[in-house]
Length: 293
Image (cartoon, rainbow, N blue to C red; front, side, top):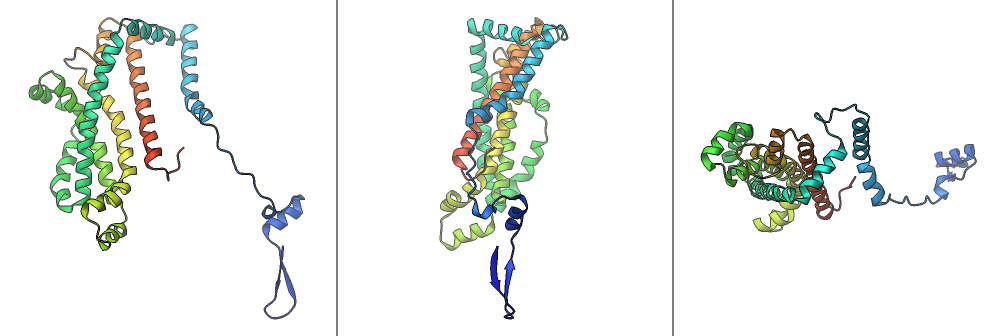
């Protein structure tokens, strides 16, 4: 509550704020006179536990449904059977052999496809001539399904590693390319104009304006590309492959080993989760101004 003098000199007016009125009604002091205690952030272990709560509950329900006979083990084996398959394959070393081969294929494809997508996205986003020359061709290629390219890939590269890496690189190229292009196009033109006024060279303009401005979109593209890479890996390992997690699942299908098939699917899911967590950690380090969930 504050007192102010009337401009017409007709005495003093009393100004009652909303906080004072609320305090008078509730019997509590006005909020302006009370210093609110700072809100403490939740511990990280608690936030991580909340993220894993739903998957853990789903697995527990899955085990319960299998134990009471609601699920046919030939259709969907129990989690305990999947753990048994994991232990069997891990003990004889077969799982690590296939896992490392798949990881190498996916990593090589992501590096090639993501690197080209980043470079060409920055190029077409920065230079109008490059955009006119290249973007329409990229958009046409983007709409071609990977499955339709498999016959040509076999003819071009044979059944070796090159064809599999090519499919993964092609699948991861477009998410990074599109997001890099969008990131550069979304930069405020005033910042670019200011860099020109200050006499920055094109390399300095890229380092100080284009790259920081496009980085949030690029990282979103990387997250999406990592997810797509495992999808392309499954496709590439489904034809003429003799190793890899995809081959392990296809080979298990021949012997009706549904526990191994489910194990391969869970490995894909866990690898995708780990890859996504790595990119989120990279976002927290490179983009500290963004609010993280």
